Length: 409
Ligand SMILES: [Zn+2]
Image (cartoon, rainbow, N blue to C red):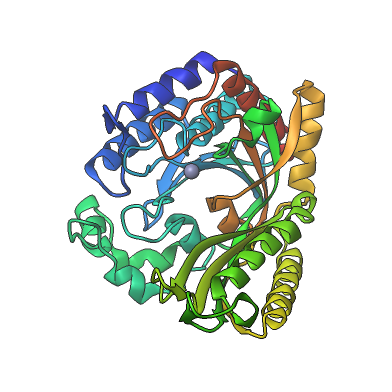
């Protein structure tokens, strides 16, 4: 694997949209189109079969003689958030391209075709919808009207931005992928947390992509005069809420190993006045995990505990489920092959989960998927300081190369 080539091409593309505050390459913007044109030239130079779909997802197929049947896909995205980092998305695209390039140059025997996929509009920054390209591919576009009406901060609609870039919004449904096109899909991505930096492992096998369940808890206590109400007669909604905050933490700690977490992320009290015992507290709880059953179980415990605590104060509470998204488990043969490849190359690795969403979530609806994370040396992402050590890029790229060879064998 040619790490120097990877670093050079990441540098070249990240210059497109680079400012003093980071990289800005929003989907369908001028910078995005420039980066796409640059990438297309790279693909042509390597000699892969290039095509685009009606939304602008890019594909580069390598199908040497003897490679037949379902395709092994690999890739990520090149659009960024405003003032983003160099590596989010781009690292996966260039590492995938480097792996296919090396397999082609060394004429390594593969019995399945390999395809680089560059998903369009992964970030929700411009139009408010995330992983758009992969949603279309997986046939998961169920809010067509919302997409049609979405516009960026300058009032440019998605429909207009696409038209300007040479695409027709009303054709996007033509890009749903046949269910059996891919045998497997692997995405390499920079870790967007601090976990791998603290564990000091260059790569990780991602066991799943977490999804949030959101709950609103309203505690009905009793507002009262803070001077004339004896402590024993109070139904202080904030005191009840405080007990619940600690209960959420304690219940979640027991779920740490099972990759479920919960956060009281917003708390409002009423009337919120200096001399009044709080009568009502409204709190929002964000519960996340990679397994629906575990998330529901933790939610059940939090629900039971809320009622119990409220009852102890002779108050009541109302629990409302605001939203529940489906997490994505990646416990399949692709993850096994990633792990096996780590062992073959003697690369130290760990298991982790992704708290952030990725195109892989949607690809998992149409094929078996795996993800590789590479250690983020800065511990931050969606930020200009995002950084990876050269040796970790090298280990990640070697692992992806080995994984693709094993999958396509
Ligand atoms: Zn990303």
